[in-house]
Image (cartoon, rainbow, N blue to C red; front, side):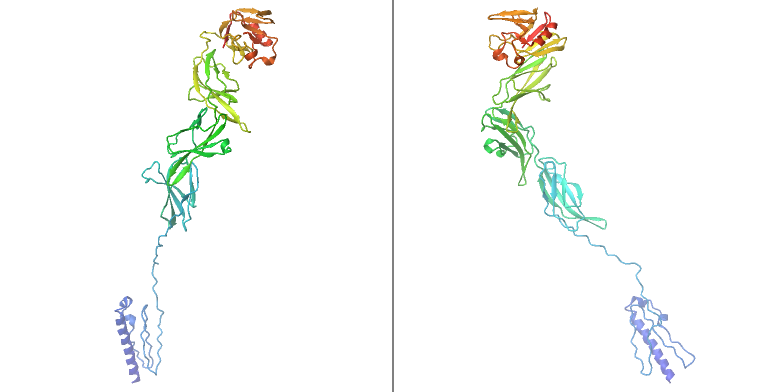
Amino acid sequence: MKIKMKRFLSVFLVALMVSSSVFCLDFSAAAAETSDSDIGAVIEFEGEDEISDVKPIVQSGMAAPEVTEPAESTFTTEPTTEPTTVAPTTIPTTAKPAPTVGAVKNLKKTSFETNKITLAWDKVSGATGYYIYYCNADNNTKYTKYTKIADIKTNACTVSNLTHTTSYYFKVSAYIVQDGKIYEGKTAFRKTATQPGNIENLKICRSSNEIEFSWKRNPKATGYKIYRACAKSNDKSVLYKVVTNNKTTSFIDKNIEGGRTYYYRVKAYRDLYGTTYNGISSVTRAACGLCAPNFSMTTQLSRVSLTWKKNKYANGYDVYYATSKNGKYTKLCNTTKDFYNTSKLSNNKTYYFRVQPYKYVGKSKTKVLGTYHTKSIKVTNKAYGKSIGNTYIEISIQQQHMWFYLNGKLYCETDVVTGNNDGYHNTPKGAYKIWQRQSPTTLIGPGYASYVNYWLAFTYSGVGIHDASWRSSKEYGGTTYKGNGSHGCVNTPYSAVKKIYQKAKIGYNVVVY
């Protein structure tokens, strides 16, 4: 009876487990795959003295049933094998979200130059770098054509090789690089411009009782600012005039005093976006009354002779020449005299000349230039319309100098003293020939009789070349002839006239101018 009871309980337990498995079939996909062999079976034993405990297999994800045991017997419910957990074959991945790129803030220009613009802005947290875009707003009126010009890592950059007085638009954006992708943030926008360039061709046009100067027009400028420095302003440069018309490129200063020196600066300016962009100033100096001399010119024997009236404010004069009116001018000399005689120039060629007065001012003796006129003349190798040839004696009254050419080559030259410049004893100008040679001889005239070692007459009225023992070496050249000149002859140092006399023959040409 006891054995039968045990068998009954065993069969009941098996039936209960089968029922539980069928119930779980509705809720677990894993249980659906379970067969009867997974549950177990009633095992029959031939002997009645031994039984084997039945232990259920607990599947992954299933709970073991609760069993109430009789008091007289204790059962062990541990499974015969450990439950297994099936691991997934791959690990699922989750993509990082796109980063948030901050906007560039406080974009500003930090430079004031004519050919470059420096920009700076606040750093953007986490930014890998910054992109710089620009647009030439003067050339692109629709402001849509932007060019990326830089990829930088810092929060400042300088854009070079720009044009002066030009409007530029800039955009700057931060970017972040993540997983090989670039994420660009919102751009900051800035309107700005380069500073106007230096004023070109600033020059004095007139310096009489008024000072007039001019400059080259800047087509992009709004206007010009004129500064002046003089004794009245304690030599400090102060804003003197604002020219609001872009097309005005000259200024006349009437508030000046004779002989005083004035310094002028001219700056172009441009008004844009509520800002005035000021240019670089050019400087010119002018002395009131230091006007251009009105000079005259003559040409003979391939030379050009220039004469002018002295300016009372000038310390001297610079003489220039060129082979074309707007060509490069070469400085021939600076002189305190009121004339200049060039060296030999090319026959039948036109030359252009300028005579510019200058004045030294201040303790530093700054050279201030006056104005000038430009005149031209065609050079001739003739003299007073006559062909002279290559052998002749040339005498310049203004320069108080004499040259002797033999076969086109300079043989001798010397300073001289010509006739007294009083209207009565002037040395006559013109083209002559030597008609008399004597050594020695005595020159006799009204109230005088002068012994000379060498005599070369070239006019029939008694004017010639001779030595003058009564003169010191310091008297030759310069201005001796103005008040202490000869009676018309050409007084010559002894050593020079001796040399000339040895070669000069009757019939040789003599040109006086």
